[in-house]
Amino acid sequence: MDNTMIKNVGQIGIPVKDINRALDFYKDKLGLSLLFNTDSMAFFECDGLRLMLSLPEKDEFAHSSSVIYFQVTNIKDTYECLVGKEVTFIDEPHVVAKMGQTETWMVFFKDTEDNTHALMSEVQV
Image (cartoon, rainbow, N blue to C red; front, side, top):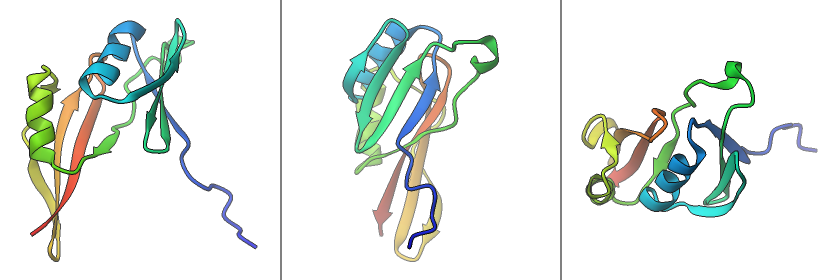
């Protein structure tokens, strides 16, 4: 018998200030697949994980989200593509860790709602 109560993360909520602006950013700039949206929420598919953009129901929930690390195959190409779509990056792709023959690369960016997220990629060297 498996005693693990939590199986996996099924959904991550991202608070937004302007649902239409955020919807355009995550759909058109990041290229995530929109599942459906309402006047106050939008749901995206991200390889088995659902991202929910939502207008906060109460002021106490109107704060920045956790950093979401989006895994990509080629961080440099993805970075260049998103720069071309006018995504605001905080830094440039860089190595954050090296484990044996694997380097972990990251670059951080802001969404239209001032949430900080990152691209990450593991590179064999």
